[in-house]
Image 1 (cartoon, one colour):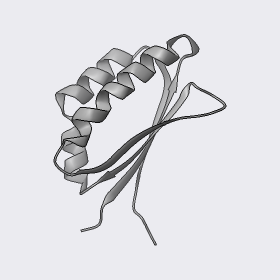
Image 2: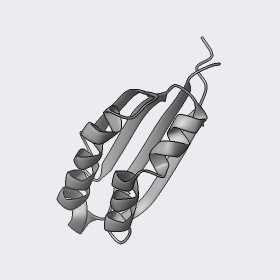
Image 3: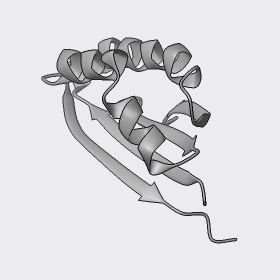
Image 4: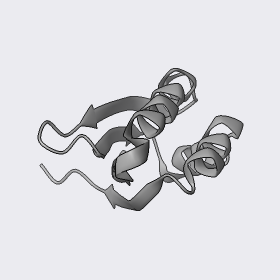
Length: 96
């Protein structure tokens, strides 16, 4: 079974960059402890600080699904609902 790669981009509203960053940082520790989480790294764009990107590697899609139903992830979604402009998630497979 191949691993699932996720690239998730969040665009914060200008007035909420710091608040969104705080909430994103809260996800890291509990997510890295989840079964099936291989890699979970947050990045912030150097030229546009409103852009955040998670690069994630999961053992399988079921592990990602469990993450998306976790309490900490649900809390994050609720908290930032009005603070973000856009969220784009790419579920990918490594081909090399």
